[in-house]
Image (cartoon, rainbow, N blue to C red; front, top):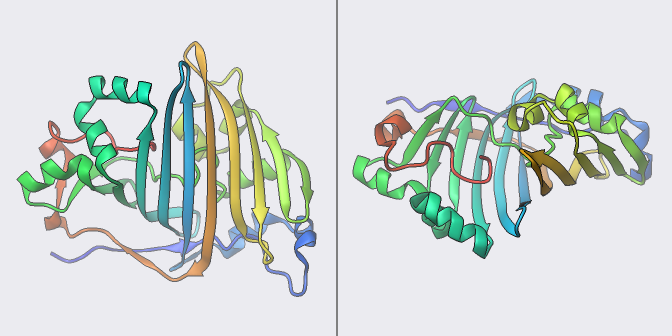
Length: 276
């Protein structure tokens, strides 16, 4: 079978200005610069951590590392590895409700190769199904691209524009701000598609760090989000490196992957990990 090759591009951040010191970065327009730098054939590496705290001392944490690729409008492909850990109380509850998935996530990292609305999963969480099917990946269709940051997709121009507008300070290459979830959901498609749009409360605080060339090198976020009749605390921190690297993300050969529907009794219903 012919291998499908997905072209990827990188967001190169803000416009590079000759001989402009880091402290002058706040004078540039990061949104226009981001749009100008989107181009096929490039990628950026990332390392991210996330922590979600539910009521009753239930905590799940994760680490993510890999590569995110872009097209002319934003993320189009990625190759990421994720490890997940649960607090003792949440672990006991997860084992009762989803024993196979919980054991698989604990056993080792999930690898997720995504292109468009299709993701390919490998790792211990789907290992048994892959052995039976003699395949290397489970194919999930109709899913969202995993975000570079669990809360704020700063690689999306509309999201970045909203964050810049809601800033409380911007000095020496460090921008700080706060925004209500309802306001962010109204302008950020990545946030709205993941968390919904009907927020009556909550708060998101963030810090964006820019490097010498004006590229986003880190985004740190803390948020309180309403869920049902209670709230959850979410923290997420992403660091970007190797901006502008030229990379092609290769999805598995069709014959090497099996559709989730064919092994639905052996694998999670959705893409496994903190993304869901």
